[in-house]
Image (cartoon, rainbow, N blue to C red; front, side, top):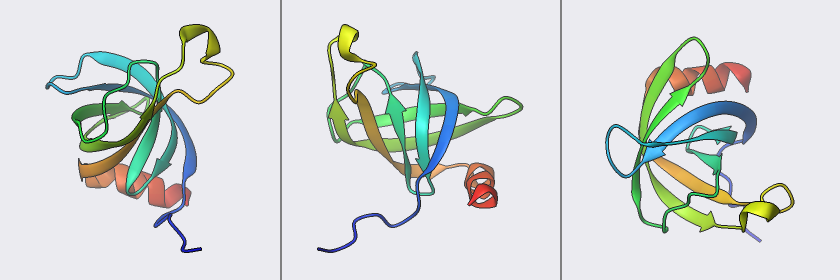
Length: 106
């Protein structure tokens, strides 16, 4: 079976603002990060193929990014803590500093 992951995913729990318009209007958090994309844990999901604008908040700095929804799974609100609910996003544009921050941790 071929290996699907291009880069290593790291735990990365930071807040994110995201949405199909700029500035992004929804707030949630990231749980996984790689240099090619992120996983947003949320119940507000968009269809695969949707372009999203994002602002990733790391505490001391905000980073801008754009991406495309690769997969999405929505769960009823009372199942959010039991099952995976969110979106996988592939970056199409991302601040270089954020990628460097990721690579320093890897």
